[in-house]
Length: 376
Image (cartoon, rainbow, N blue to C red; front, side, top):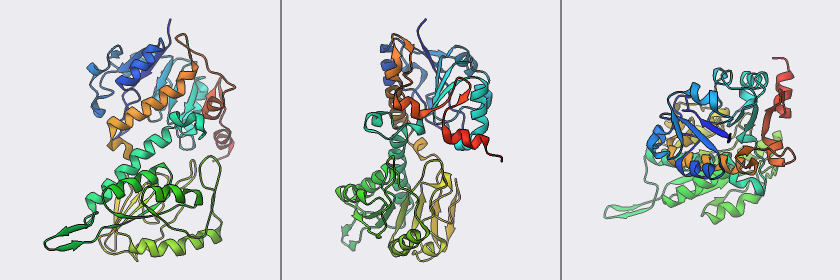
């Protein structure tokens, strides 16, 4: 019997993405894999059941869970879903283990093999599997649209019969994938863009997109493509320089994050209070605490006329393309393990070793194992 891969309808409120799209379903089928999808799973992404040719569309989640050898998902599955899965099944999704310890325990108890897409190492060979990057690109793009849509100013310079309108000033904090996409999008909309990242190596990338790099004199190159945490003195130096740029900005897009840890606080209340009324902050780090002191996850806060947006799950605002990119990431991740219609994971492969969360009744991810062993 060939390997059976199942996909459920996402149940988290506001989640519109799906882990499988027709194009990727055809690729899986070419590997000799049988596919099952819960009815309506792709509807919110504009993918009706009829678009999944060659895929078994089943009426409910229980039917998928009873048959699937591998479950693909966007959000972490509920503990109740895990408890319905057959032992030895493989789960691949964003699992957020640092925030989902009860789920990790359920995966272990059920002896499920689970891979967390956010743990895929940032190495050259794994770029096509990097779901964090693909979804961050969607978030960076969407963040600028939020800023432009809510701005009290035009973004581009306009020459009109009534005179010339100056372009908006946009500041992007953090030049990872989301930040770079934000820079590119703001520039396409005609804004003047300044950008900052603690990794000095990003200067060339920022400038190649038309942004102006802000040099604070602080460099914090880290491992795995991320920045290291700053010292208190470095944070003070960073804050002093950035405060002047924040004060002049019509829109600030903040994207600085450290996976598995609270977001660094970069925009204090005092900096917000120096901004002009009508200015906007879109804080992409809201879900992990926010880069701005005043950010509230999932809410829009107004302070002294400045609006601070703490958006939740921005990629879900672009469900078709976000789903397409994510489904390709999943396929590229699993393809090396698909052998003659079966799943054969090479446990010497650094990509699988780095991204596995649970296997054979054990927690394989060291940080998550330590969190489980630490008293509450």
